[in-house]
Amino acid sequence: MTTMNRMTTDYGTQEATKPAKRIPRPAARIFVAAFVAAAGALAFAIHGGITTRVAAESSLARSTEDAAIPIVNVIHPKDGAPLEELILPGNTQPFSDTPIFARTSGYLKRWYFDIGAHVKRGDLLAEIETPEIDKQLQQARADLETAQANYHLAETTAVR
Image (cartoon, rainbow, N blue to C red; front, top):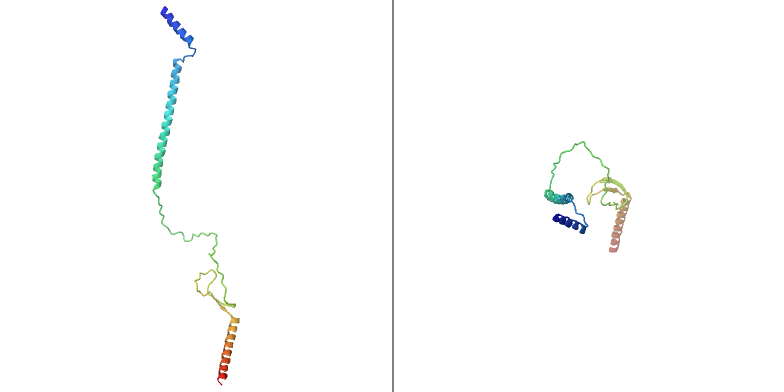
């Protein structure tokens, strides 16, 4: 009996000196199980993240290699429907406009190119009839003949 009393008293004194409560064994097992489950979930999440990144990297490498190969689509031209016509609004303007002036005044006798026609340097565009200029030319020729006649007369008079 004394041994039992000692155990009891030892047990009783230990309890009296330590005020903290002891966790019963089933609660400790639940805590350990929860800790192990949390650690397993964390390990599973890390493994899943690493696996996803490795798969994404390999997919990126495959798609990069596929994109590096140029794809060329060849289309052969075909005759369209001859009655199919597409009318679109628009207007055209030249790069530069060149005003055309006659060297003399007169009446238009003949026209060789229409408005908008393509011409080259040196092409004759039109002929102008100039009756006033023609009369002035005839008068100038007559004055020349008179001047030449007077010159010959003066030469003859000088020789006499």
